[in-house]
Amino acid sequence: AGMSSGMGEPVMRKSHRNGARSRLLAILWIVISISSVRFASSLTSFSDSEAQTRAFGRNSDRLSSAMRMRPSQHTLTHKSETTLSRLRGGLRVITEEEPVKPLKSASCSGDAKETSQNVKEYDYDFAVIGGGSGGMAAAKEAARLGARVVLFDFVKPSTQGTTWGLGGTCVNVGCVPKKLMHYAALLGKSFYDAAKFGWNITSKPSHSWEQMRDSVQNHVRSLNFGYRIGLRKAGVKYMNALAKLEGDNTVSFVDKNGVGGVLTAKHILLAVGGRPRIPKEIPGALDLAITSDDIFSLGSGPKKVLVVGGSYIALETAGFLISLGIDVDIAVRSIVLRGFDRQCAVKIERNLKDIGANVMNGWVVRSLERKNNETSITATLEKRVPDPTKSDNNDVQIMKYDQVMFATGRQADLDKLGLENVGISQDPDDFKLSTKSDMSINAGLYAVGDIVKNGLELTPVAIRQGEILARNLFLGSNESLDLSKVATTVFTPIEYGCVGLSEEDAIKLHGEESIEVFLSEFTTLELAATHRMKEKPFDEYDADMPPNCLSKLICLKSEDMRVIGFHFVGPNAGEITQGFSLALALGAKKKDFDNMVGIHPTDAESFSSLDITRASGDSWVAAGGCGGGKCG
Figure 1 (tube, rainbow, N blue to C red):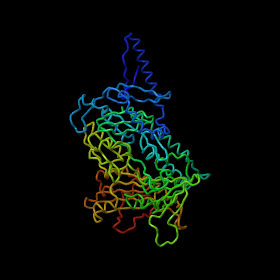
Figure 2: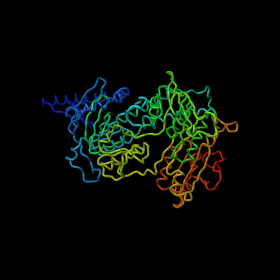
Figure 3: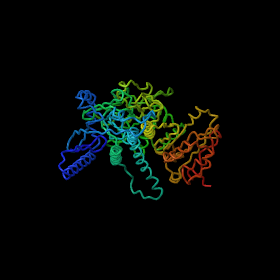
């Protein structure tokens, strides 16, 4: 019979030699059978959310019983392994003969190439725990370099039971669905502009949450499919199973059906990412609140939402909900966008207020409850610092919401990973893992992405770390990643992109007298022509939206005005910031920006003509109507 190896290569066992014709017919039959099985398998759904949810609670118990089976039933070696292929016709167990695939190049330490004998000491050269951006990038790069690679991914249900497919946070419940709903929200605001430019909008536009959700989720599922196919093409063995460290170079695993096993790998990478944190001390929060794990797949669109937190996730979510016509309160404990440039953060907050958000500064949630089988959630909020000048009872508010979403931080998803079995522990301050400069935790164990202490919780960072690690391990490279020049963008309705230091950090690091801040505020040309209005103006004289753009450069005087901070608030900030981040990485100075000839009329050209400094005391708010450029 024809069988498929762990690396996707056909293995054939010769039968009796009954002539060339018989052998040819047998080979053709085997090839057709394998192709049919693989095609049927590729059509199978990648995840069974309900089964994963039910199975997760019992997997830990079933793992111990699975590991008590005879070695031939559960132990994977370089000679054989047992995999599960879930076909439409049922569950089929396939025992596979796996050929040893030698490494192409040097080991992680840059020593001479490993011998065939050394390669066979482990079932795999590289085991990756976590199928998010960083894990998949590392796995595929390692396989490209000749390593035998296995990747584990298993989605633990959210507090509301939400699960998803292969790809991690970014593609399923992060960057991708967020950006798509951000785009949907921007389309809604464009109807006002369209009417101003002559489009006949015959009726008030309405929005279907269900249609948007389905479009977003269908695209996400297509990406799940593509990622699995990508792993197969790269030669990576994918296992939809919950993995656990059992000791040095040893990993146990159990799938959603409770079937488990153990394997060994010379190098193990932890790339499990993070999950949203809901404060356990708030009564009702764990049972009733949603997080970013749930918002993109809600069954129906809410009419009123409380977003708790001032993080970029909180503001991005609040921003697209408001623009979709949903009533939103934002409970902010202290300040919004902590760690970002304060001037830019305040501008984002003001814009959210101008488009209709109720930003409740200093308010915290004390309890959540659902009364008398109501569908709505009753939230009790309290002013963090009560106003001593008030004698009334306004320091406590009881409000009803369709949904309450917590965006109060994330934590590394290291629970039940078996860290105690390899003698490592989480940092007591942020519960992350400390790594060395080569991304190692200890010999043969590595970590990338959101679980790394003092790292950046950004998808491109995890991807680059994973690729660099793979090349360092299997190509003998000695690469590293400079996190100080990594750009990022907050996708609020008016976006905010930045790279380098904030003004506050620049002052802290270099001193206020050592830096020069150049800045300009202006209105995008198209919006200046349409005169967008505030949703909640103070009076008739406060109706127009203020300038939506802010361009800002922070320069170091002692290094010939080298630009050490780039900040832009405005439309398409992500696209603009990505290009300018290269200039900062190459050490651009203010004179390089001055010598740049702008593209007119754009917002980005403002950086070619920044001549007003904060120290000058002059107003940096532009009075012209040509967007970021000069009309004459």
